[in-house]
Image (cartoon, rainbow, N blue to C red; front, side):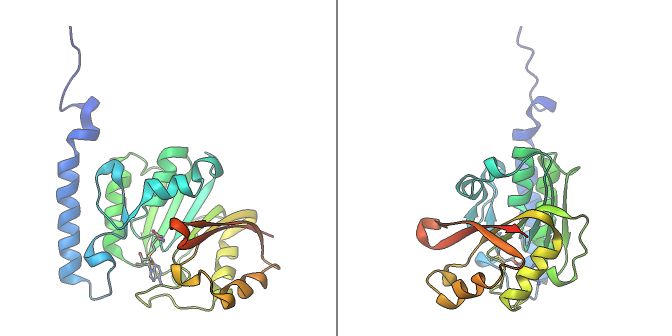
Amino acid sequence: MNQHVTHGESDWFTHGLPGLHRKIDAILKRQRKEYGDYYYFYGQPYQALSILGVYGERSTEERFEAYGLRELIKPTDRVLDIGCNCGFVALYTSFRTGCRADGVDINPYMIEIGNLCAEYLRVDDRVKLTAARIQDYEALAQYSVLFSFATHWTDDENYRVPLREHFERCAAYLEAGGLLVFETHAADVGNEAFYEAIKTFTDIFTVESKRDTDKGERHLYLFRRV
Ligand SMILES: C[S@@+](CC[C@H](N)C(=O)[O-])C[C@H]1O[C@@H](n2cnc3c(N)ncnc32)[C@H](O)[C@@H]1O
């Protein structure tokens, strides 16, 4: 006899999606009406999360694989994602690896979407997403890994600090020997001033690796906290 139960616990993942999408649409509608600030990608999330069918500009699953996060992140890691947008990279990394992850972004609507998705994926017990400015964020822990993806300066101009200040902030969140996974902007590629600045941070970080991502449009660096 077929014991499979539909619309019940065994199928929550699929059957709940239309409800999740309705909630996300309502949040995006509110963002368009209420958020005076610049928003990315025509008011859609900057990040996509295909596993939940959430539309956005950049694929979380692709970045997770391309950046080697499956190999880099261990279940015992505690990750902080700064300027995390919906926090999809943080929560998907937690979903795939079992690590704990915190995220912070200035946009409360993106954080609301991220928290809904974390709850949906049942990782909300180990993922905490907070709406705050990076400059004001009070760390919940000393982190073993920090993600800084396309966030060392922002198009919305809510974060424009000298590069040195950004790296010092990252270092302060990390334990000694911690890992900074750093994605550049496209504008940094080929920018000699950027490369020269990176070379002056050897008192706080050593460069473990550097490679191209996004078809050569960006770099991905791994830095180790001294
Ligand atoms: C280009 S997006 C990058 C998002 C994410 N790191 C990624 O790569 O998928 C920049 C993000 O930084 C956020 N942001 C801008 N200024 C911020 C600030 N002062 N504090 C926290 N987040 C900020 C924006 O809301 C946006 O989600």
